[in-house]
Length: 91
Image (cartoon, rainbow, N blue to C red):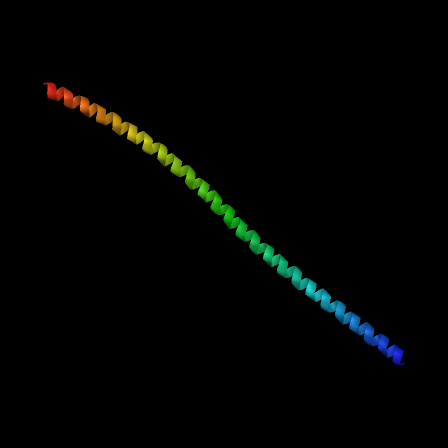
């Protein structure tokens, strides 16, 4: 009788241990999934920021080209104004 009782207690203990291990494993899996989701969200934000920075770089380059064109146009206008002043000064 004592051997049967000890076998039953051992079997119940084993089942409780396995049930605890399975519950812990499920919690760990859920926590890992949550962590991975957070990491993926942060990476998506970083990738989004990188694409926005690249877009801003392109815009800055466009503005730089437009500024260069405006400076060249202003230089030509100054040259023409100087020519007009010289013509007026000669008269």
